[in-house]
Image (tube, rainbow, N blue to C red):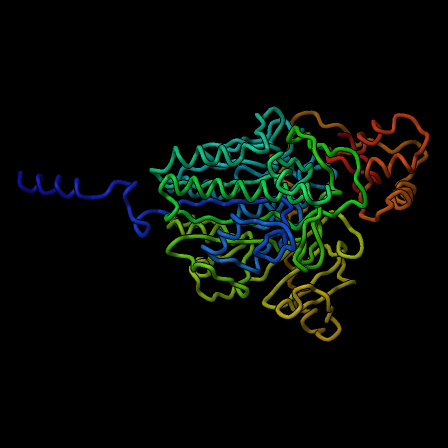
Length: 528
């Protein structure tokens, strides 16, 4: 009896889950992933006029990692790397998920394999409550039969850019849903993916943020307002963590899926995102900044793949620190966050990243693995020509598929990739070329057939009789007046002035419904 009484007293003295100290409890994890948000689109990164007070606060209270890379310069493959800890090319995911006909023409699946290892699943199996709010785009709204978020390890989800028939979340509801989840789950460890819409087109700024920037011209006003909306979402999430009493035991990260979108030469028609069921401003208002990095979205140069990465973890990550030496990538997040949560990875998990938890805790860490990129999308001068890239240590090599064209940069003293030193270091070029080509040889040539819809898929539309791909390519070059490698409706109409039904014909080419025509969509048209 005395022994039982003693045990009862000890149990009563032990703290409940909500009373555990930060050192004793598993950390909550919140990953805020923005869209097309350039490295230079933060005031703490030196933007000349935009203010991001909440992100600046995150940097003051945590560590700003200056050398973080995503593994593809567009959204779907970039997000695949975060989810799986694998290079997206291992799943034949090379570009964004579009309609099935376009996916199949690109040699892609229609969704991320739900059997793939995922960060939320590993954390859920370790006792975490898991949620995903915001953009999905690991499939496409025109795809039937795509697995729902719970198939990837989520307890709760509310998304846009999901599969056909999925309930759609409002663009400005992401922070609200996140705040609600935090309040409801503060007594247990949780993991939340918060994937913001900002600053992707169409730009749909709130009236309040537009008012804040009304002193600017419309182009700057719209983009500044969009960034302010994204920053305010970060602020709302930080406030919710504090109100719930869990901010001291929550690891918060902010990053972006790729570099900033290219800017159209002039304003076009309203931009439509049918995946998110919204209409807003087009790419003329996309004036995001790379902070001096070369290239933008769709480029394997640093402006396309080096993005913000800020980490706040009270008591663990140094405050106000700037880490400009540790190279971290998206595939490192899964092993690093699992280590932070005390989660042992399965014996059969073989990832492409490495555990860099020590770097998050302020130690100087040098990665041991090279980094690889493959890009099969836009191919144009001056910054979109590389199809492969590899980084090892201070060196980064960009090259074409056949390796007949290469560019070598020492990133430690050439952050802007302005000086090609390939001719001065042939031995490094040879070694890195072999490294990346050997890596490419390990990639699948076809997607998993189980990851394609079984619904009827329209056959690719043939070109108009008598119009060859070569003729279309020449027309594309003539009409593409701003040379951004996309045709707007205005450019298309100007090129075919006087012809009938041009808006409908434009939409027929626009396979991914983004309000503009890529070279691929126009030269090799496919059914929607």
